[in-house]
Image (cartoon, rainbow, N blue to C red; front, side, top):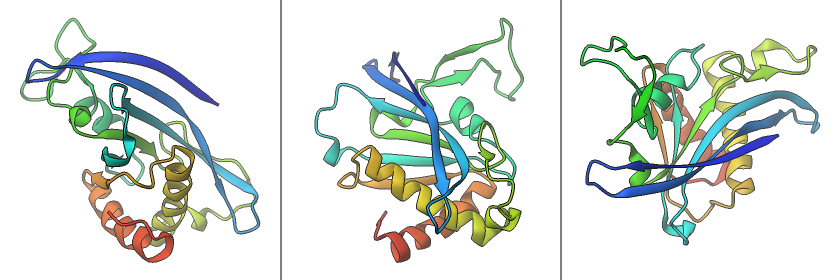
Length: 187
């Protein structure tokens, strides 16, 4: 299931940026084609860009392991950020505001929750946990997941970037090699 909505923010340069938001889940399959897990994502796509072939797409991962994409989403690169002070403490009234420093002005962004974070879950109870948990296992299934996502949203021609925070940096370094060597996806 995919849920779609729209929004608009004002960039730090005073430019209105209209965008489309898609949230949903995409399966993780085993070698036999059986669905074994589901990964949740939030995909922001600037809606006033017609030619997606030259528009960059950024895949964003939070730290962890064990952390969903929420902090990359609502504290750094997303179009909205939490209403916090300079030291990171919430300000009243609680809530969020436009992020004038979002990267959505120059690239579309997808925030991905790896298995067992956010709304992403193992579906097949018979699948060994070692398929998902471990540096190499994490990189392998997420590489396959990204390959499928890029195909589904027709973004193979787009320049692709990975961004990660904390453990997300380790993950994206491994994913860069995995995507290049096993999926012919160059970043």
